[in-house]
Length: 253
Ligand SMILES: Nc1ncnc2c1ncn2[C@@H]1O[C@H](COP(=O)(O)OP(=O)(O)OP(=O)(O)O)[C@@H](O)[C@H]1O
Ligand SMILES: [Mg+2]
Image (cartoon, rainbow, N blue to C red; front, side, top):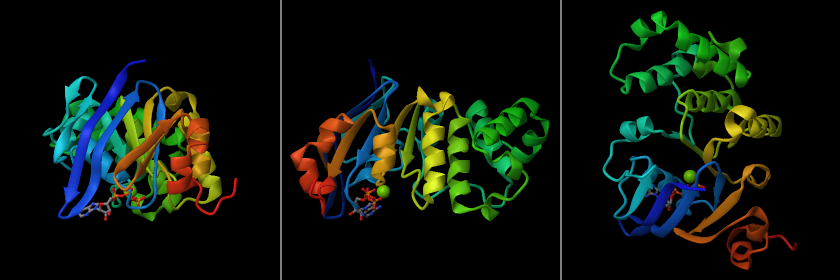
């Protein structure tokens, strides 16, 4: 296996708050790697440092052999590291089909500086792929509905579709099932395990342990800005530091 993302000694502070402390983490090609930890542990901050939304105070982030520090978020996205956000970032006033076509067009053009409406009308290949992707996510029946009008679970799946259509090398998912009912959560698990997505390298931040243990090949545990353990699901379940910091809370097992 080769390392696709190498986070090396990353520190990030916000004023007096040390949100990330000397974080080292290697993501291997093809794996699904879950990052878990209590609220405020620094999980989203770590992802933001990888995708160019935040600049670490020190340390390096190497993706596919290239240093990402200082690169603009859209260039990192174009390089193949795609993040699906904790709060869905969709275009609420466009329909679902347009929502999925726009990232596909942006990926092809290498920029968002194009007239999406003019281009959308002409792009049959991208239109067809967008419809197919919506169908994979069981959203095709809503393709002409406004994205702002669909349920929260459907919005999250729409955002996943918008990520997938960019054919990412590495997909970063920040709480992909947050706010979903169990039925929608299970559908999302099935999608992430489906043939189209199972071989894609994924980093998943999740609080729902059912999701984590259903999907993860390896798990890292972040607590107060530190990675306190990395291992297989079984290793993590049996790690005393993890039980103390997170999993064991209120649990006698
Ligand atoms: N832009 C910011 N400015 C100031 N403080 C921030 C900022 N972003 C995050 N923080 C703080 O950094 C710490 C880590 O936040 P972060 O959002 O990374 O946690 P998290 O592990 O993703 O939590 P959750 O599970 O609740 O999503 C928290 O104490 C948070 O309040
Ligand atoms: Mg978060």
